[in-house]
Image (cartoon, rainbow, N blue to C red; front, side, top):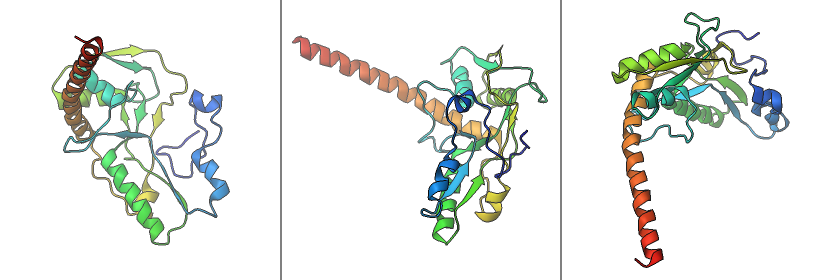
Length: 225
């Protein structure tokens, strides 16, 4: 049974079916054989989220699997609805709770980890997280508030291996690395993601049109027309 927030020393036993199916070693376990040869820092975190505050870079997966971009896809009209996999978990609103951490905070942690090693730090492991989880319904409601748009949610069956709560404790990283969260508010995380989402929607249209135009030109040139 995991404790919450999950400490850095928590035993590794992921409930996810992928792990049970064959991924028997964690990256930390694979590094044990070289821990006395190569100095390293293990950074463990859950859901990287948000985007560059200036909207220059952000998430773009094909296909998309992450909750916040999927919710924003619904807000932008790119997707009809967002599926809630299990409305009956042992949580306050019945939906899974996850730890979302902004990519800028993650980037800062990686820099601090490198500086730690360069300043004679020993190989070590750290959790990164905001320490406060947010439920699926909280993410959806916050996205509605940020975007000012309706977001249709459809309740579905639970997915195998989804634990009710995954929230990490980053106290060790704060003490040893001097790491401090900047973007620890869910609304701010979603605001930056939404800004990027609107930008990438424009770029997607441009890229699709450019691809269609180039394909047409290639066909006309190839056919001699």
